[in-house]
Length: 119
Image (tube, rainbow, N blue to C red; front, side, top):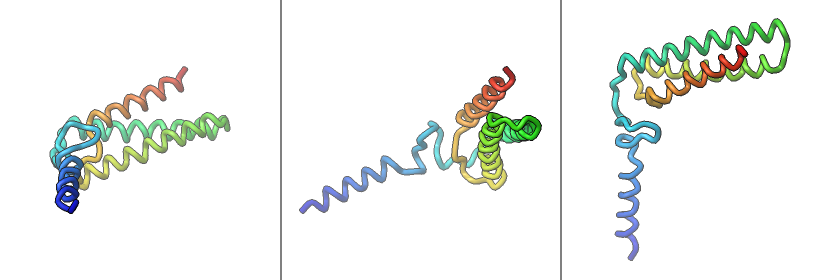
Protein backbone atom coordinates (compact mmCIF):
# COMPACT_ATOMS: atom_id res chain seq x y z
CA UNK A 1 0.00 0.00 0.00
CA UNK A 2 2.65 2.59 1.06
CA UNK A 3 5.59 0.82 -0.54
CA UNK A 4 5.73 2.81 -3.82
CA UNK A 5 5.66 6.07 -1.87
CA UNK A 6 8.39 4.90 0.51
CA UNK A 7 10.52 3.71 -2.39
CA UNK A 8 10.15 7.09 -4.08
CA UNK A 9 11.03 8.85 -0.81
CA UNK A 10 14.10 6.67 -0.30
CA UNK A 11 15.20 7.33 -3.88
CA UNK A 12 14.81 11.10 -3.48
CA UNK A 13 16.69 11.05 -0.15
CA UNK A 14 19.49 9.09 -1.81
CA UNK A 15 19.69 11.65 -4.61
CA UNK A 16 19.76 14.54 -2.16
CA UNK A 17 22.56 13.09 -0.01
CA UNK A 18 24.59 11.46 -2.76
CA UNK A 19 28.23 11.88 -1.71
CA UNK A 20 29.54 12.09 -5.26
CA UNK A 21 27.49 15.10 -6.23
CA UNK A 22 27.27 17.19 -3.09
CA UNK A 23 29.85 18.27 -0.61
CA UNK A 24 28.80 19.78 2.70
CA UNK A 25 31.54 22.41 3.00
CA UNK A 26 32.51 23.21 -0.56
CA UNK A 27 30.74 23.89 -3.85
CA UNK A 28 33.23 21.71 -5.73
CA UNK A 29 32.40 18.25 -7.02
CA UNK A 30 32.92 15.75 -4.19
CA UNK A 31 34.44 13.05 -6.40
CA UNK A 32 36.89 15.41 -8.03
CA UNK A 33 40.40 13.97 -7.93
CA UNK A 34 42.01 17.18 -9.17
CA UNK A 35 44.16 18.97 -6.63
CA UNK A 36 45.68 22.20 -7.81
CA UNK A 37 49.01 23.71 -6.84
CA UNK A 38 47.31 26.21 -4.49
CA UNK A 39 45.70 23.37 -2.55
CA UNK A 40 49.02 21.52 -2.28
CA UNK A 41 50.83 24.68 -1.16
CA UNK A 42 48.23 25.53 1.49
CA UNK A 43 48.29 21.97 2.88
CA UNK A 44 52.07 21.83 3.12
CA UNK A 45 52.23 25.36 4.59
CA UNK A 46 49.58 24.39 7.13
CA UNK A 47 51.41 21.30 8.34
CA UNK A 48 54.78 23.08 8.40
CA UNK A 49 53.45 26.05 10.31
CA UNK A 50 51.63 23.78 12.76
CA UNK A 51 54.80 21.75 13.34
CA UNK A 52 56.88 24.86 14.02
CA UNK A 53 54.29 26.28 16.43
CA UNK A 54 53.86 22.95 18.25
CA UNK A 55 57.63 22.65 18.72
CA UNK A 56 58.02 26.24 19.91
CA UNK A 57 55.13 25.97 22.36
CA UNK A 58 56.46 22.67 23.73
CA UNK A 59 59.86 24.25 24.24
CA UNK A 60 58.20 27.22 25.98
CA UNK A 61 56.30 24.83 28.23
CA UNK A 62 59.47 22.95 29.09
CA UNK A 63 61.19 26.22 29.99
CA UNK A 64 58.42 27.98 31.96
CA UNK A 65 56.13 25.13 33.13
CA UNK A 66 53.00 27.27 32.70
CA UNK A 67 49.69 25.62 32.01
CA UNK A 68 48.82 27.96 29.15
CA UNK A 69 51.83 26.76 27.18
CA UNK A 70 50.72 23.17 27.69
CA UNK A 71 47.23 24.00 26.42
CA UNK A 72 48.74 25.85 23.47
CA UNK A 73 50.96 22.86 22.73
CA UNK A 74 47.92 20.61 22.72
CA UNK A 75 46.04 22.96 20.38
CA UNK A 76 48.95 23.21 17.98
CA UNK A 77 49.38 19.44 18.23
CA UNK A 78 45.80 18.97 17.08
CA UNK A 79 46.45 21.28 14.15
CA UNK A 80 49.59 19.26 13.41
CA UNK A 81 47.61 16.01 13.35
CA UNK A 82 45.06 17.60 11.02
CA UNK A 83 47.83 18.89 8.75
CA UNK A 84 49.52 15.49 8.68
CA UNK A 85 46.22 13.92 7.67
CA UNK A 86 45.81 16.47 4.87
CA UNK A 87 49.32 15.81 3.55
CA UNK A 88 48.82 12.02 3.70
CA UNK A 89 45.54 12.49 1.87
CA UNK A 90 47.36 14.50 -0.78
CA UNK A 91 50.28 12.06 -1.06
CA UNK A 92 48.08 9.00 -1.45
CA UNK A 93 45.84 10.78 -3.98
CA UNK A 94 42.69 10.21 -1.95
CA UNK A 95 39.73 12.39 -2.64
CA UNK A 96 39.97 15.60 -0.67
CA UNK A 97 38.03 15.57 2.60
CA UNK A 98 37.96 19.38 2.82
CA UNK A 99 38.26 22.14 0.28
CA UNK A 100 41.11 24.59 -0.12
CA UNK A 101 39.04 27.36 1.42
CA UNK A 102 38.66 25.42 4.69
CA UNK A 103 42.36 24.60 4.88
CA UNK A 104 43.10 28.28 4.25
CA UNK A 105 40.66 29.22 7.02
CA UNK A 106 42.40 26.81 9.40
CA UNK A 107 45.75 28.31 8.44
CA UNK A 108 44.36 31.77 9.24
CA UNK A 109 43.16 30.51 12.64
CA UNK A 110 46.60 29.05 13.30
CA UNK A 111 48.29 32.34 12.43
CA UNK A 112 45.85 34.30 14.61
CA UNK A 113 46.54 32.00 17.56
CA UNK A 114 50.24 32.55 17.09
CA UNK A 115 49.82 36.32 16.87
CA UNK A 116 47.73 36.25 20.05
CA UNK A 117 50.54 34.33 21.72
CA UNK A 118 53.07 36.99 20.74
CA UNK A 119 51.20 39.73 22.59
